[in-house]
View (cartoon, rainbow, N blue to C red):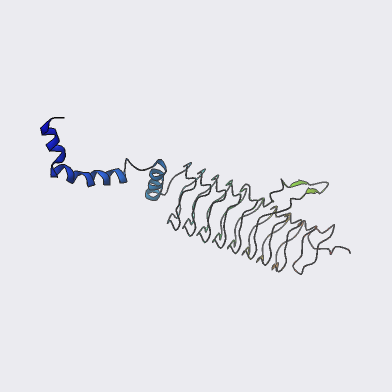
Length: 257
C-alpha cells in the first residue's frame, strides 16, 4: 500500500463513512434471512409458506395477515393481534399464542400440537379440520361461536378410532386442555373431545351433536341448551362428578357401582 493510500485510510472523511456503512449493514445486507422475512411480513402482512420457526413477535400487530402454510413452530406470538388472519395449513406446534387476538382467524388444516392458546380470543375463529390438536391448551380461551366441527382434540396416546356401526372406540389417555374455555354457541358437531379437560367450560348453546366425549372431564361445565344428540359420553365425568356408564349416548347414564 502506498503512503498516499495510507493517508486516505486514515483521513477524517473516511472515518465518517464507517457509521453510515454500519447502519446500512444493519438495515439491509447484514440482516439474517429470517429478519428479512419478518421485515417483509410487517410491511406487507403477507408471508404465505414462510419459514418463521421460533420467531419472536410478541405483541405484533398483524390483523388480516396471510400466513397460509407458514412454518411457525415454537414461535413467540403472545398478545399478538392476528384478527382475521389466514393461518390455514400453518405449522403452529408449541407456538405461544397466549392472550392473542385471533377473532375470526382461519386455522383450517393447521397443525396445533401443543399450541398455547391460554386466554386467547378466538371468537368466531374457524378451526374446522385443524390437525393434531393433542396437548393444545385452551385454558380460559374465548371460543364463542367458533367453528370446530370435526376437529380432533385426541390425546398423545394415539389416534382415536371410531367405527360407526359397531361403536368401537380406542380412547387415548389424554386430550386437549379446555378448562374454563368459553365455548358458548360453538359448533362442535362430530368433534373428537375424548379424554379432554372441559372442567368449568361454558358450553351454553353449543352444538355437540355426534361429538365424541368418551372419558372427557365435564365437571362444573355449563351445558345449558347444548345439543348433545348422538354425543358419545361413555366414561365421561359429568358436570356433577358422576361417571357416565355404558350406553351413554346423548345423555349421561350413571355408571353402576
